[in-house]
Amino acid sequence: MKITIKELYRRKKLVMITAYDALFASLFDPYVDIILVGDSLNMSFYGASDTLSATLDQMIYHTKAVCNGAKRAYIVADLPFGTYTTKERALEASIRFYKETCADAVKLEGGRERAEIVRYLTQNGIAVVGHIGLMPQFSRSEGGYSVKGRGEEEIPKLIEDAKAIEEAGAVMLVIEGVKEGVAKLITSQLSIPTIGIGAGRYTTGQVLVWSDMLGFFEKFKPKFVRRYLEGGKLVRESVEKFVSDIHSGNFPGEEEIYK
Ligand code: KIV
Image (cartoon, rainbow, N blue to C red; front, side):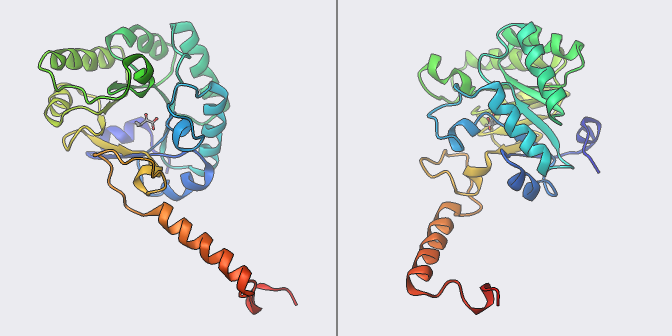
């Protein structure tokens, strides 16, 4: 049965994973609560060095693909960088997701300064997931990626950001790259579920990027990633075997030919 936001609110622990295509979405769909079509696809799938060049058309294409593979999980799609600089632009982009894909919600990065946009989308019938803490779409303006909540002065700001996004109507909040204690404090002060990535153990749910979690993305491994598969290694070994089987005449064999 399709998982709705009401059903997510009934669940105590939430599991979110990213997916960018129908094949992997169909593999993850029976197990997870939420599939995120994250703009991280611009890095791990497209090979760019950050998420900023992801386009709306690209995100819609991948969301459609995920919708073809996943029939059960709640689907969240990232609004890419530059598509929610005004509330009107944000609504236009979100309406495209609702009309052209099966996305249940859109996700956008930012705190208090985005609250009015979250409110406007919500008032217009769009479910919004917030994203605070380390926000990859700010990596160029901030000069890289850094864990938030380490300085005492950052903590009240993060809490205010989370509360402003919830108060504006967001259905869920992703907290990325935040000290465990701070993410715990935020979670305890909100009534919407929080989904952590590099935010410790006390958020309502956890999310990992699929290619990190399955060991296909090998350029670097952030501290918070646990690899459940050495995907890259397995692929290399398998392709090596395929090549050597062809060279040795071992493939195709008797059972792989038409007679
Ligand atoms: O784009 C993405 O995959 C994300 C996750 C890191 C939460 O936003």
